[in-house]
Length: 609
Image (cartoon, rainbow, N blue to C red; front, side, top):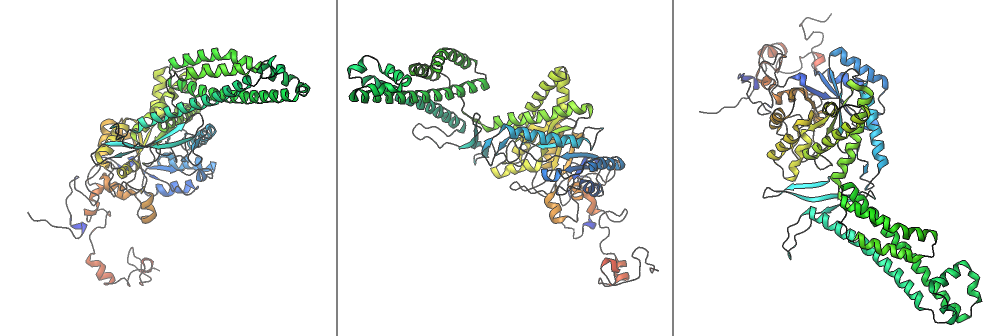
């Protein structure tokens, strides 16, 4: 059979719902307009006007975009009430994208974690949640918060040429200091024939760091011993032989004039003894300070990991060291007590399992972020009860922190777990009741455009689909934006290479109540460059949604092929009556359309009186 092409879309009369449009095969022809939302202009604090403008495009649902904290703080309180009245007036549903704030307390610019910043982030988020409740005080408004904002990728992964997923960079943090950095994947060990493994590299770094800590303490303790032993060997004169070096040191400390009463050769030897005793005392204190720091590192690591064996050893060591430390604290001249404490401590610390001085940032970040989100969700439940806002955590663009499905899943599960504990403790709910509230009020916003950016690391459709399969049971909202897998462009669906049809299928197969999932169009780049055409229409065409509310054909992907009938699409191309009325040019068009035909109505053709 021969093939043919249509010069005009109006020549295509195939009304099959499966017909392809310029956007390809329909994504989900059962998705109605009522399940799709558009975002408001995120650059204006006049969200009341922005909501009205967005609703005028024909959507039923609107997501208010407060992504910038500077914009959110300038939104008048009265506007929130007015937006709620507008919502009721037109029968719309509202969701909210809250300001993007780093929830962990990690400051990438400073390269450190600050618990105060985490608390500040929690307060900012809670303020947004409280204000959002005014937008829908009788319902459960769905609020999106980012899992991270500026956090570096905790673990960079790529797909190699042979199809394997490998880690090329691992971000780590020293929890005691709050400082963080990264370790690259180690190179291959040709001598021992070992392949590079970044997790083994982290283990080796911890071993080296721990060993170096103990070595530094030991070096300082050795210098203390040397100085004290030299003090013992200096006594050569009768006056000094009567008392030991410690006695000379004590006598000089209690009676400085005693030195002046000695003969000059004796005095010189006494001064050397005192000087060495001073050095020995100084190094012994420094060694004990290092021992104390090493003890705290080991104890903190054992406590965090739940290593009971190490904790028991450390508690016994603490009891054993206490008498020596107490005697030294009461009498600073008893430096030998400090030496004994250091020697005992070093021997015991060296027998312990290597503590994790540096931990993977991914584990730390999930723990701190879940604390923030669980606190915000609990405050919402505590203050608003049945109308508490729903907190959904969104994956940021690929390459940032906590953006993969498995990381987001872990964050949501830990957030729910902490929420349940808080509710059971303060609200006296049973575990099952608390879990029901957690499932209702905490979930995910899955941005298909953000996860599509995994392609720049070598990932393919099968890997992206696996990501959606992992997160599907937690999804309460989807952000619809298309791109080409490298940059954070925001186009309507069907204009890039996001495998949305596969995503929809997986959400339906593994998600819960998929028809209730909010789908929000985020097409900032489209609006910027093609603002005259709202992104709603191309999105509906890409999905192949039904035109009519009763979910019957025709569908939006066929709109270009419909001619005549209802005034949708372009209709018949260039009808003869246009040439008969206006000629072949544009000069005879009415003035309001850019022509020169004045005094004639373009609606009825009758002269304007």
